[in-house]
Image (cartoon, rainbow over all chains, first blue to last red):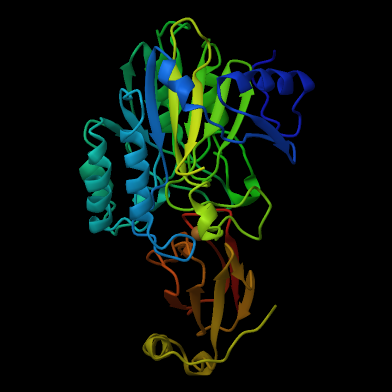
Length: 312
Length: 112
Ligand SMILES: [Cu+2]
């Protein structure tokens, strides 16, 4: 299977079949408008029996958001954390893929921290564009930037997996998409140098590193460069947020996945006039919010990703 | 979709006056305040033609914050829902601008 094809429209039958075989690990597939997406299915009993390392992803908590799409984003974040605390297997740690706050206010960061810390898990953050809105762009960095490079990128190892947190929400260019920039790409290339190709790699960043829907800015201008650097590795998992819905595709050794928000849903690509917050019936909201858990088993090429909604 | 209101904002009036003082008398009369709305991640109108001395006011009507940025020319703070940003154009030229949070949002002010 050729490893590096970014066309969303060219999903081959073979890829579809490959995706279908994934249903066994908890993710069902559908293809809409040429974009494969998982329907977010879940069998927590499977997660309970899975050995190996499990970590969690939460994203887009938008603490401070109080508009009709969800008047209490802090409340649904707390529900998400409660959900995590009730999981049968305690995860090793958590990643947060950005937009912790809605407007980068100090109180929003404090409230987010107060709730998220109730998980008693180590949390590895990357910023979303909503986390860099304060005048001096210092609140995120003061809290989460320690020990990171540049605008906040870093890597770490856990359970035999190499994790790389990237920042693609800074210095965006008019008319463009998310942006990593030359300095970060050079660091990434250097970070991967000398790593055994059998080391599983997890790349995480706020905006999708793959082109989901450029009309809404859902992609990263130079994301392809980052993917070039991980091309030779046997197992690569790319975890993103920003689009407030589950979407997934597999290309060769690379699995791309976006997580739900804990705050509000956004429409499917092109399904509304804009990507803004989507107001749904109150009874349906919690089915469209949630968290993702990711399980890694030694000798299995792909990490298994299970999306769990807050309800339903 | 060109529904530009001729409205005077108290806030903008000072800016307009300041601009007027700096300009030669023949072009000093900025008799219009023009508006651009942000709706559904779009600047409306996307292109605006104005006279030197005109003040343009942007209003964010989305549930998501946006910014209005023209490299080296002007830069708003983050505009939350219903927040406004005004700028008085004292020099002719083409001013391309965009939202630094959602860079696919672009607009143009042509000043003559
Ligand atoms: Cu914007």
